[in-house]
Amino acid sequence: MFFVRSASARDLAAIRDVLAETWRATYAPFYGAAKVEDIIAEWHSEAQIRANLDRPGGEFLVADDGQMIGGVCFASYAPDTRTVMLHQLYVRPECQGLGIGRDLFAEIETCFPGARTLSLEVDPDNEPAMAFYKAHGMAETGRTDNCGRHESGIPAVIMSKDLAG
Image (cartoon, rainbow, N blue to C red):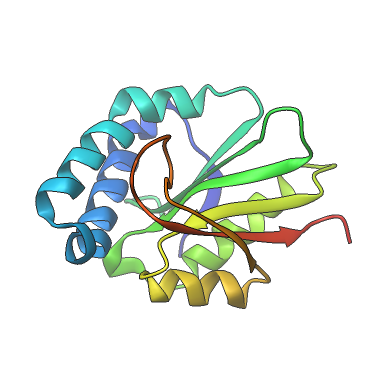
């Protein structure tokens, strides 16, 4: 049984493992192994995870069963808005289908009182993620050619959900 809690510095290595495992399993078929390893090194380094843990206006959650971290979620307020950006929601491949993603998503929605909108970017070829987000009330509101980072060259669907109602 996994429970959701706030992440801490002691979780750095486990968070990195979840991100790396999930990226390899999910995105290597789309981008190739070499590009995925480059992205893992840049986006999911321990330094980047630490920066996200310490980010003002951010919330980093983990799903923990006492033995391992099964999933991670990181969101933050977009600067000068009442919009929350969901940057990461990943569940270890062997833990998918256990409700971890659902629990992380439900918890992150409650972490930003006063927020009006929850937004995220997702690869349009990642059909399981697209279906998950649609099932949780997200709707397509745009597209970008640069998911995650300026000039990443990774296309994404922008999805949003009204939190104010």
